[in-house]
Length: 409
Image 1 (cartoon, rainbow, N blue to C red):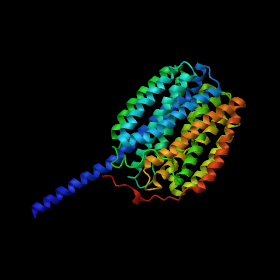
Image 2 (spheres, rainbow, N blue to C red; image 1 turned 180 degrees about the vertical axis):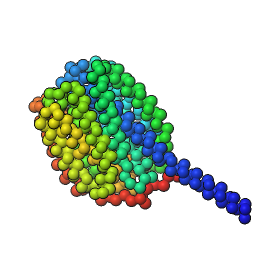
Image 3 (cartoon, one colour; image 1 turned 90 degrees about the vertical axis):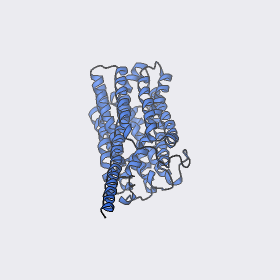
Image 4 (cartoon, rainbow, N blue to C red; image 1 turned 30 degrees about the horizontal axis):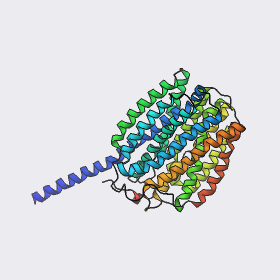
């Protein structure tokens, strides 16, 4: 009896230790993926707040800025499409590590360009690195979310916006002390590459089912509504990400520091809204949430159109609050609405459609701004908000319960 009792105690002790180790893994992975999203945001905003400085150095017009941003979006789309294949073959951890190298090196490479064509090439590579990390980090987020009883995807995207806030703050400091763009980008790129690489050791390893089924697919009919929402959300988000600093310095007549603060206000409310989005969706439902968020975004655009520096800063802040939860909610539901569709495929489809909006947006806004004004160029964003509200009626009703959580092994 003593022997059997001893064996049972050892077995129980082993199972308890195993369970603790299993519960620790998703917590560490969540922390690591949070760091990756933050790094993504800091690097991107570092570029965004210095767009006016890069533009002045190369003597670019608003239309040429739009073409450069088109290169960024096209690179992102190629990165998104490639990432699904790479994640299936090598796992998200290694894809994120490689993407970090491309992303941060390309940031520094932007400062070495001498003309529009070279700039387009550099930002295309920069966008490719971002797109590669984007799908891999979101796929990690979906896998981690299954170990939790509720939705947590919004918190990851909140930290991307938080990173944008940090990057904007660093940009404001860099411009106020007269730091060159090259020095600024080199310091940020080096520090964040090391940070991301260090955090990546806690990311989840390659999934056993990765590599089964097609890695590149067209969106199914059930995914079309999510894709339209992604397109509209990122088209409008580009207004804040790519054009806030330019708008505040030109149309609103603000200083370079005001431009950086406008981007910071946009990123700050994006971060706050995304932290609140998970709770808001669970208390209401995705359709109501998306419709209310679209209304808030419309108010934000309306305030920016008044073209007064402080009012426009407030407008970008309200715009960020409205847009905050749209993409994470769409990605989270799209990745889990169909058990037969691997999350990576759904994420890649919705993200690619979103970056389609990101690709079209800069060109449309830039060309309209060159022909008329930047204020007039913001009007199409209001039209897309109406479309977004209409499409929410096509979304499936999805309720995620505690039983859906994947028990870590």
